[in-house]
Image (tube, rainbow, N blue to C red; front, side, top):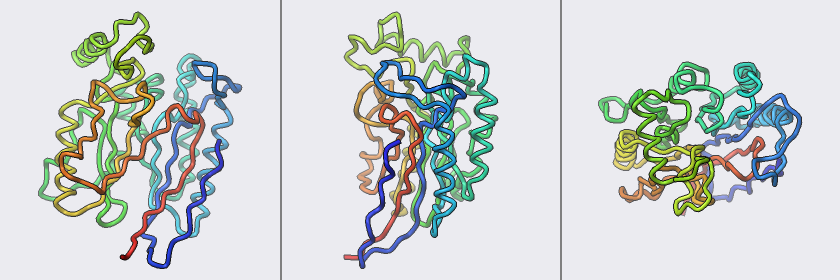
Length: 294
């Protein structure tokens, strides 16, 4: 794991409001080290548990603990499914997270769906929707049960939104369901390859099986939440897996890669996303949120 970046000193005109932790791509499996699909990057399956333990110890010891931690997906590796160790590995990681003294919010990545169905995840400890904020008299900001997304307020005037980047996906869905057929149709329209995980020759390489996208229903809900935040002058942090512009193979599909908040003129929206192809080991970071007087 890369060395943890140290936050710079606060200026005299800055005031620390709160902080939050971020960890991604733990991808634990009780296996010896290996390599990624391309064979170009080392994978530390078993050792990732030590990184998680170190991260939790770090957060618990901070003099000003983070208000929460965002876990941005791929909590265990897909290899667990091959060895029928998915539930055992998830239990080990979740028991480790119980040592954390602050709330943790989980998002779902492709490796969650390599191991479990969407129905399983919805009823598991990886569903942290119970931590959501409910805005009185604004039912339009309540997410549907058709996707896994919610918002919460860790500090006044700051709203965090967790999105479901596999809302539209063939992963974790019953193959006989209409949604699977709809998503498969979208995928095949953009990816004629026999191997649907291959971006070879694609003009839009994000259209691969290990990716997913957002339904219009989820985007409409996001628009409602952003509208509320805009009207109430809230800062917004969006947590999502995956949502980075490069490489295109880890962008969301179907073609919905525009930042939907731009239409609202929102300038105080930050995106926290998983570094899918960068480390493939647990990533620890504590982000500080400060005010600066002018």
